[in-house]
Structures are given as structure tokens and as C-alpha cells.
Image (cartoon, rainbow, N blue to C red; front, side, top):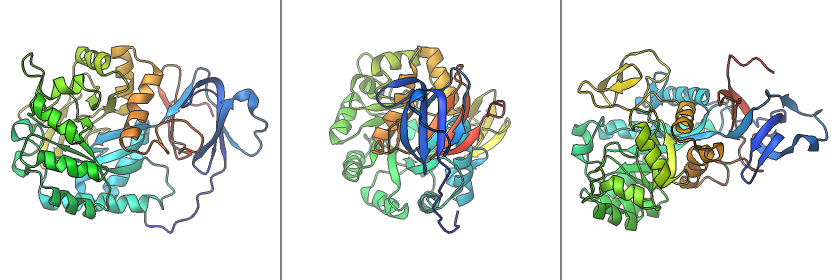
Length: 407
């Protein structure tokens, strides 16, 4: 990561014989041209004048190309966790995530000691500065998702209760400085002392306040919306539920379009039927697919650590000793295919929930979240069964499905 920066003048790449899901249209039998990590042109294959100066990437009939996935909520993968507080850990996550189509992500913390949180924040800030100098194809770390410690004790879930703190905007400001201004999202409970004040502070600094691990009433959520909240963290999980006389966080999230909603589509955290309900009410325009995955993803079943707690991973579940769900081992490509299976949503809607919505929330839609000229060439190629074939990060192949033999 520390090597001297050199301009990575990649050979221009031409991807053709593919259906292109561009920002403003769908182009069958299309092409995309990539130069120095950016999309420079796309259109119908017949419009290509010459292949001579390009590295040509061909695909099988029926393949599609869509924007890379952006995961706003991921703790770890492949044995590493954001809270490890090392450059190697973050790089391992960044190198691993293209295997599931993720091209950008927020490195997500957990409620922990102030010392451990600060170590992790400084590390991610340092990594982001260094990543610009790396020539290895990998998912881009957009910033930090600070999940906790400003949450409600009774909705802690897998967050260690002993480290929960009252929201203090001056503490957040200190942490943002330590993170080199890379904290982009904060999950908090607005109903606890200092919550609304922190939300206002976050909005003034362009940080996403997201309601999570919260017992807020409907009225308290409305106060949070008025203060600038625009999102809820893992909808339905660890939040006040819908009651016919008290709508709670869930009711407010479903009712109000000001709120985007993260959702874990593994069929475990939220049932298929409730996912269908959320999709029908919120629609793809206000849902954001996340994984909330932990270090155990891509590893065998066994015992792992999450925030200093032992987690058992068995039969596709990650649980604390008391049976509380502790994140997931969900991959984004599986979340996508589950969403299609559960709801019948279109590819265009998948793009909204995995790329456009998170990019707009992060205020990076000018460079990510859609296929458009001038944007980063962060791309995913799927075959006609929606299997992941290639993941391309800034114009470089970061993952190729080993079972795919066509060159």
C-alpha cells in the first residue's frame, strides 16, 4: 500500500457482446469502452469502429453489465474485521469483496471501547489515503460506517452493551478528525440523550445519520427526520417494531419517503414475506441492500470474534452464545438473487438498491452508482442466470469466476 504512486496507464478495455444497463437506457448487443479506469463510451456493438487499440473482453450470449455493488454496512470478510485496526485487515476485505460483486464499501465499526474505536478509525483513514496509490484491483473503501456506540441498551443486539455511550457531538468531532474526515454514516438511537443534537451535527457535516439499535417512538423518529435523519439501519432488526397504536421506527420507516432503509436480504434476518412487504411499500427507490457481514464470511463453520464476543457460525447463521444474530455471512450477489427470487424485482430495480441509492446517499453519484460516461468503471458482469462472472474495479478485473472459461 505504501509504494510510490505511479499513473496506472492501463491498456484501454473494450467489453462487447453484452446488454448494457446504462444510466439512461438499456442497450442490447452493446459495448463499453474503458480508459484509465473511467467509462469513456458505450453504445451498440455496430457503432464500434475498431478493436485494434483495446484489450477486448468478450462475454457469453445473454450476459449483462451493471454498476458495481456498494455495501454501506459490512464489518468484515475472509478472516478480517474493521475493528482489527490494521492496514492488512482492511486490504484483505477490499481484495475479497469483488468476489461478490462489491466494488465500494463503508468499513463498519461496532460498539467497543473508545481506544479500539479510535484505533480503527485512524487505521481506515490511513488506508483510504494509501489506497489511491495502490495498483491492485480491489473494492474502494469509501469511508467509515460508525455503528454505535450511541445506541439504546435494550436494542443492542450483538453490540457489546458495556461500551454503549451517550451521543456527544464533540466526541464525534474528535473521531471524525482522527478518521481524517472519512466517517460517512453513523448509526444511532435518536431517542437517547444527545441524539437529536448529534443528528443535527452530522447533517451539518454531510454525514448520514441512520436510525438503528433504537427504541424510538414514531414521534421521536419524526423529530429525528426533522433534524436531518435520512436513513434507517438494517430495517426491522433491533428497532421498535410496528404496532397498530405505536408505529415505532419500523412504521415510520415504511411510511416516510425521507428515509432510505438498509435491509439484509438473507432470508434469516428478515423473512421472505416481510421483504416482500418492504419492497411493495418502500419500493426499490428507497431500499438499500446490505450484507452486515462479519469476518466469518468465506470461511468454514466455527467460532469467530465480533467486537470481543464469541460468535458461532453454523448452517448459514452467525449467532452469539445467547442465540442473538451477530451480523451475517451474506454475500451481495446472493442478496441480489434472493431479492429477485423473493420479490420478482427487475435488474433496473436491483441497480437502484445496490448502486444508485447508496451512491446518492453518500453523495458520490457523480462518479459511482451508474454506467455513464466519465464515471468510475466499477462494473459487474452477470450471465443469463445472474451468476457473477466478472467484477471490474476502476477498469481492472478484480474477480473472474473460475468456472467461467470464455476469454
